[in-house]
Image (cartoon, rainbow, N blue to C red; front, side, top):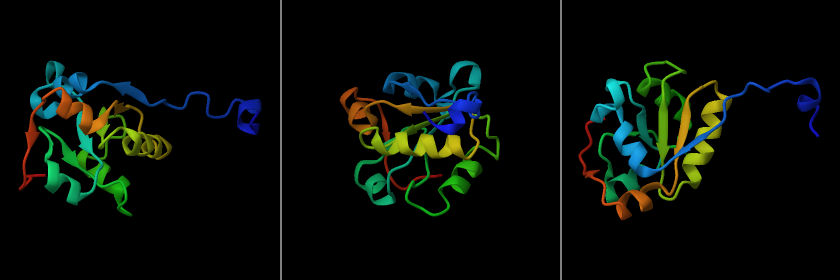
Length: 134
C-alpha cells in the first residue's frame, strides 16, 4: 500500500477512459461530435508515422516523444485542461502512456482509443493524408 493511499491523497484523480475507434470517430469535434461538443482526437505518433500512414480524419498531431508534448496538447485544447481529449497511436500503448502523462499534468477528461490506428484501419475509418493542416 502506498502512503498516498493511507492518507487518501489522489483519490479524486481522473482515470483514463477507454473508447473504441467508432466512438473516437463519431465524437471527434472536427466531425461535429455530439452537439458539436465532441472531443479533440490527438494522434501521438511520430511525424514520420503520420507521413507513412496518414492520420485519422479530424485528428490533431502532438508527438509524445517531443519535449514540448504537454504544450502541444495545451495549444490544441486552447489551454483548457477540462476539454475532452481522445488519444490514438498505432496500437494503443503509446496513447495510454500519453493519457497518463496528461492526467498527471492536470487534464481531467482524457480517453485512450483502444486498438489505435490498427483498429481504425480495420474498421475502414477515413484517414487524412499529408500535407496536414494542423
